[in-house]
Amino acid sequence: AETAQFDGVILSKLDGDARGGAALSVKAVTGKLARWLRIERGAAVAVAACDVYRPAAVEQLIKVGTQAGATVYEQGTDRDPVDIAGWALDQAKADGKDVLIVDTSGRLHVDEALMEELANIKKRVRPTNVLLVVDAMTGQDAVNVAEQFAETAQFDGVILSKLDGDARGGAALSVKAVTGKPVMFASTGEKLDAFERFHPDRMAQRILGMGDVLSFIEKAEKATDEDEAKELERKLRRNEFTLDDFLEQLSKIRKMGSLTSLLGMIPGLAGHKLSKMDIDEREFDRIEAVIRSMTPLERRRPELIKGSRRLRIARGSGTSVQQVNQLVKQFGEMRKMMRGLSQGKMPDLGALTRGR
Image (cartoon, rainbow, N blue to C red; front, top):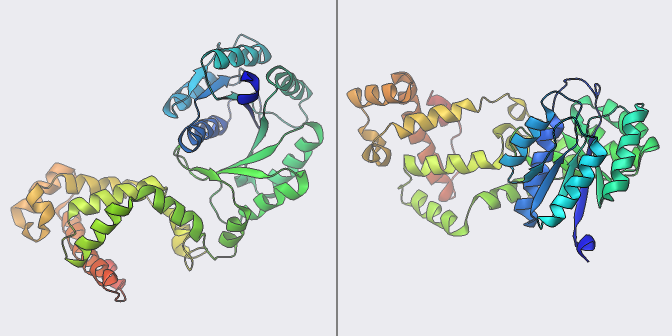
């Protein structure tokens, strides 16, 4: 009964330099999957560090796994990966874990030794799923190597990493066709929460420039409470929206993912030059620093911010008086626009840029 209720997942990555010091993106994917299982499924997750070939791979996995809220089982780099996997399985069951993710070394499809190692780990762990991590940045090459991998190894599904929603997603839609295996998840950014179930129909919409409204709505619903949304609407109608409210909304938007990926989900902007801009997320840090350097009264009534107040805020936030002026002016224009939206009026989008 215990075995029937326990899920084992093996992650393997297609890699151009399986034994070298190449990028450790699969570690990030392991952490993202662990976090997703913990948050979305309420599972107690453990991770087995079976990549013993890369420099610092175990240390990297410990860091990422801990950040994801998972227990990391490791025995360094001197033990055989198959033995580590078996030991970790016993530990996970003894510790009452629901899922064990076995993080294996990246491998070339022609590397017979590593393919045999993967087969032996599968025999020892008897996993529920074997997932192949494929780098979507490589486009059609990702499809080719996935097809070759499928010819020599049995796996159940694919995780696409570095999937940014542009034309490379076309190759992602081809993976299932050539391997017969579904794309189960997509890693869409650097942060641990930039990870989601893969929906081929939604990806097709993004590629066609139609956006991905459902994903956008799902992210927004997770970030916003219904009562909070009603209170925000009330404040907008009464023109009571403050810089504190703005800071709170900014924080929620950042939790939804990168602004570039969010723009790509909006119909009319998908495929537009706006959705392809390399937006510097540090700009949000600057805005937050400016607002947090204000007094509570100044946040409620930004029209009070004149002369000496602006200089004090600029010094406190490590910015310039000009940047403080710009933020205050743009906030005023944004508040007018949002109030108009709440009253069913068409916004003057140009006002935001005139605030610069």
